[in-house]
Length: 137
Image 1 (cartoon, rainbow, N blue to C red):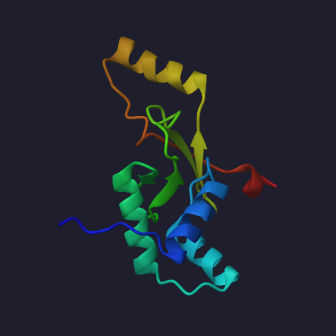
Image 2: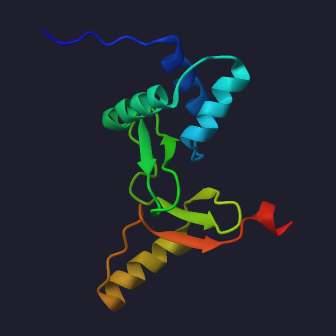
């Protein structure tokens, strides 16, 4: 007999938070801070476990940019994600922020690399390093 799926208060609150942050990458640390601010007691193991379930279900994407940063998660929603195929990133070298990048020029670069250099870029793993606008101020 299959195990019944049910939503706990924590799971519902996690989905609510992720929806509110749609289009942005969040870390487990940020999620944990959110729960603390709301006065909801939930451990990081529970957050990870629920996020991994959502990744398996396809409603959340997990990004591991490099070996030194925490994994980031992005809410995709119940429907097929609009930019699942071309998901580039910018990473700030000062604060570590990961910025989702959708840009036709970068997509043109990907095509150029394939056509002229026989090199296929992996959009999900392609990261541009630099300094974000907040850190430049």
